[in-house]
Image (cartoon, rainbow, N blue to C red; front, side):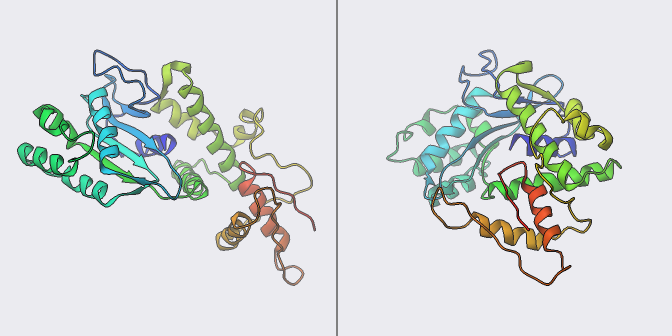
Length: 297
């Protein structure tokens, strides 16, 4: 999600943003000392938060309740009182009352917002919180939203790769299938490195843009020390013409069913010369950064 937010910023969707702070430490001067309230934030040149986000993941059978969602948002607005917007991003299905909470946050009138929040949170551990919230906190709460992102990991990865290709093409840098996987993982690595505290968690937008537009002739050299997406063995080069529908079909077959430790297989059938080998090579190159693949002719 942090990588996607940086892409949004570099494409101009967040005017004034100059950097992302990843796993930012708490600043008691700016809010409560709650270091876990914010996963990442986009900040302006004065280090004021433009977009503060918390990411909450869960399994397919889980449901996010209105009280739990409210509690997360409350921590966020108190940890970053000056933020222009707050976003709880989750892949968890929302309880109907959590969906209603998202709608209630659109209410402009503070007394009415307080009343509706009180109704939603009745009989929860937050039952008395709306009445205790200041008008300023209610104003901040109106800048908060819940976003459900149900994309699978491979769908997010493919979308990020395609956006990187498009961004580089606009700037005449170009990016092939193999290089896209490697660059995506390198940028994700840089984000995780900052999340561990390096560089005080800051990833400047100018630096991110420079990494994103690394000249094609330098990609293999600059990223050669990493082992993401390296093809081992006599795997043909990917075809010039992508076949996304076939690649998606192979991915579906290899990802479905089977026992946990079972090696899954997919056979490509067709007349000689129709493109079986090049299709298998295309899939291998496109997924080499995320799994172990063995092919045989």
